[in-house]
Image (cartoon, rainbow, N blue to C red):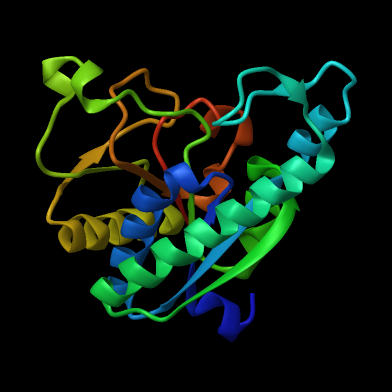
Length: 214
């Protein structure tokens, strides 16, 4: 890992709908550790595969009937999401007073996260499953202050994950909790764990962003 890439916080996501939460978290972290923020938007390759299927159809906002889904529709969607993310990043980064950049890659979110692990020792990966709307959550899951959950231990990597999690919780004005990556608990606002513990299959089941600490 070069000094230049390590001096960034990476935020990786494949859906602009997750942009607000991920950019808030990553910008707060970037400010706390005094780093630039590098946003990576992953264009879902699976969407293009789906568009190539003969039975794939789409109903546009103003249309009254279904029409075939075409690859150019997916490409247009990619551009719209990237534009939305740039707008969000510009607004949120100003509030947190951090410098930012955005780049685009194509693939899938877990694969992109694995590929990007060597670029930074602090990488925030968006949730792959949508979280429940606040009103739909049980009362015990509703909270006012952010919860940062951390999977750490007494190893050097585990201890660093604990330190970074504490920094993030302080930056967010939230609370810090310990957790297990496979625990069936109410999702926190962000889960922090050592990069070596990153298992795409397990993380793919989570409904919260994951901060990987190298």
